Image (cartoon, rainbow, N blue to C red; front, side, top):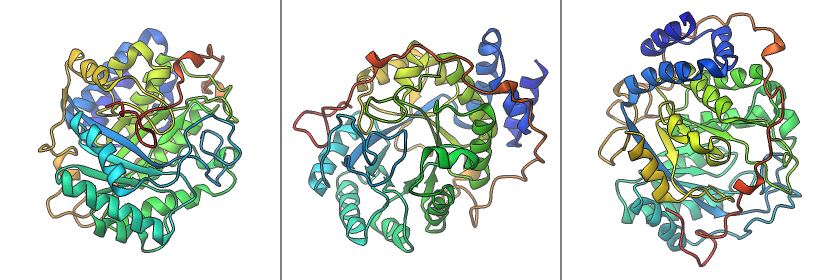
Length: 394
């Protein structure tokens, strides 16, 4: 297929595809799916070999968020029966993180619900980062605390944080339909603050919220321009008690096409297979490792994932290997010696010059032509790990 040959060539050169090309990936048929995965897999292997980076989530504060993000079980007015608890103490968070590290996680992601941290919250998280680094000096720590105020990113960096996560989630044009209590521009500003402070930026998307193909391409192109080091690709987990509980649009095949499109647009970036992979990819998860070079180990913030051992078995059975702590995740051109944002020599400019955007394809490429069967049996609220007396899943 000429399209796939073109995209492979561009991916190996780190050249941005056109919008038409990205849309065409999402429009490919199921008959062509293995060809699409194989093509994007060539790009993935060029920059990341057969390594899979493991990340582990610790939910420092769960529920009771004042924001109204429609996809989130912790949102204002949520009726989801999730765990709700206030800040974990540093020793509790460190104990939770240790389980992930023991399971092979190279990065620990410290997450807290809320609009954004107060200065006191930053002090709390800083103490937690220092405690984790004291026990596991080689582990990467990523903070995800919401919208940052001026100076907070610098304080997190000084405490030892390596990265900051703040997802764009969806396209700028549709963002107001998903969230009204903050703006898309607020999110972009927080990612840029993290980059300016020398933190490695982590920013991604959520697919399956009723968006069109054009929306997906928009947000991924925006991410390419913003140039984070890692791009988590989440697939909506429709949780009862949230406004999007009935949104079941994704098939395993569509998830793979989305991952392939992200890989072609962001060829040399850590693409992370994140929330919802068990629910929507199901038995096709191993195939997705040909596209993503990073996954979360075990459970998510408020829902359960498959067992940590199953994750490790899946990686081995698919012919991949867990990335070691002594291996640099990003290609050399994105991870120069001497620190900085971890992406570029001397600053955070995007890799290469972006190609001129081509006109959009027809709206016949819109996503979600038919709803899929609701697999509520695959959605389990987390009842173990952080905030409970039960052992974590790692």
